[in-house]
Length: 467
Ligand code: SF4
Image (tube, rainbow, N blue to C red; front, side):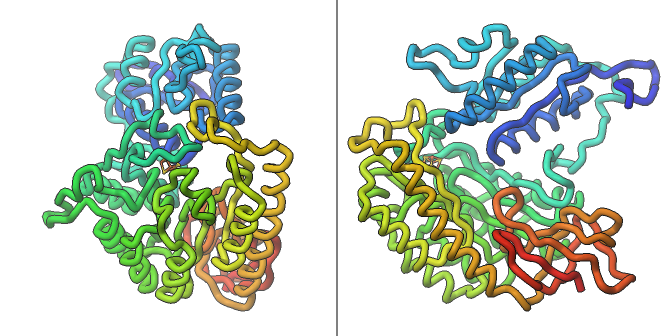
């Protein structure tokens, strides 16, 4: 490998920017925007610090472990490269004394920005590493046209529909880092989706902080797509994404959907296969008093009834959710309410954190902080129940035939491979382990679909025979 581009007239080496992306899918899409802009301006980018003229670290500042990982990465980049620009959620964080946390811990960084700050990051890059002026370099192609560069494998991509959040959950500091909800214009979102499908994406993952709230900030303004008016609203967004995905045979998967009545209109679209019958609904708890203390969106909704209605309307529906065990003041009875809820609601995929105080979150001041050991004990009890429910639901799939999107297939799948069904989002859910096909003519290819007969369930995963 060489750092020098293929010689063109005149011979010129493009400045090289090392890039490290930490954090959640929302941070990943910020990284993609910055990388797209860097590439469009003729910078080379790499995933390593070595040989780079400067390094950008996109950080996460949500929980203490993420803060530590981000600070350590900045330290490593400074030690190995020395010229570092920091962006992302940690960049917006201040210490108890009101100082910028990154600057205090690493005073040698060149610049620090908060999240969703492509232009500020580019300004800092221009200042410290002037942009190349070669017209040939300015024509470096972008991987997905208007959708820019993606950091995910070519066959799936995250589509961010909004920034920020209007809620003020007491355990969360995201609104103080990312601000209030700002919905992207629907025409832009749909144009990006189309470009991604054209570029080979087979699974589009819709993300935001609150997907159900899309368009609230612009009063569901009417935008335009393909010459037709379309409202900036979740229902129209999902309908349009389903329409755009259809000719490509691609999947659309919805994340961060709150159980508002408006979602009732989305579920029929899942039943007809317009979008995947999969909902990532971050519930966090089931007990109304805990939800009130958390100040959760839709805390007054009857979540169990709603989930049951959704399942009646769409029996294939898979529900993923995350929960917090040991929230301040949580009584044993409230916790058991949560365990009962998991059993009754039959949550297919559940994740759980033991409550951990996040610097700056208002929940830290709530009375009744539980001992760490008790929070952890409840997390373990929660996971035991959640895994029991999940395993039983997976077991029901044995014998069925499912459509599987192939993520990995060495030797064209002759030795088997790994894929996912509609029930498995990348990175967070289980996978489908594909056995070597019995038919000699059958091959598996990354980014393509295959039908597979489920032969067993193992932990969070399924084992299947491609047919
Ligand atoms: S909905 Fe609550 S947890 Fe989610 S980003 Fe908004 S404030 Fe944070």
